Length: 334
Image (cartoon, rainbow, N blue to C red; front, side):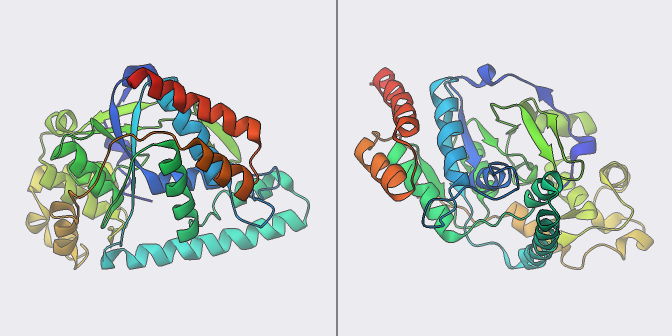
């Protein structure tokens, strides 16, 4: 889920056209989860082929990625998670419990014939399996779109590619974690539909792309990246539980006044996660790699038809449309 910094985030709304020519290191796992959540039948059932393989994520990846590249001139590099840090185990278990609860509620709503409620519950039941990930990577290879396999957290790798290697202009993710990993820029809501489904309300809300520039936000609040990390630890991250009753605004005031966790008043300091030093280490020294290739490749049209049409039951017409987009892009770049 990532750290909740929304109340203190300084953002600027932009248009997709503002990103023309920019290279974005995209949080691949988060993108696939979004597609799995929203691309479903009316009753919440995910799209599947005749053999039972889920294809919702492939539909979303195929259409959105090729449109962003061909129509908006945005260069995408997908970055996928590797092995999570051991401190993330508790968060992963919590997510599993939440998913199991929503699966039960989804089945109950579906059995009762409440289609609207069933869809709203189904959004929270998505599970991204290794086979789904491999299908997504295969699709990207066939389309010629580059991806990077991170050794650890994908957002840490994406931030590294922007900050250290200058291989991308910004991280593309809905979550804020890349800011804590030192990303200079974060672009959120890189969506063509311009809307997001809210399961708790059972309706969509409008979305507009936005950019967050880390140095501007830190300068505005007069804090450092180290202090932003301490602030995040106080409210809770994927690697630790925050202090009950302390949200982003309160945490910001505390860190601005006292400087860091060590200098907090004892009554607050005693409630900080005991592993906070280890959490700091994750953000300061994340596991990343320089061993990746981000070149765009030639479209493998025959392989694309073989995979999507013959193996996953996609219509020839839809695959042909996507192939035309990528061939047009490649003809321009040649």
